[in-house]
Length: 42
Ligand SMILES: [Zn+2]
Ligand SMILES: [Zn+2]
Image (tube, rainbow, N blue to C red; front, side, top):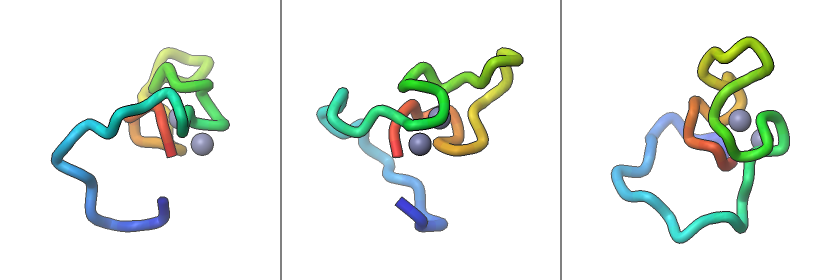
């Protein structure tokens, strides 16, 4: 998803786990994942 608009809903997930943080929403430093903005999916 390369959109500036963030969905206001939580999609029915586990299907699009972020390839960067693995779906946790946090990077290796415990910071919000820049790839998914902490959403855990992309
Ligand atoms: Zn990703
Ligand atoms: Zn991520």
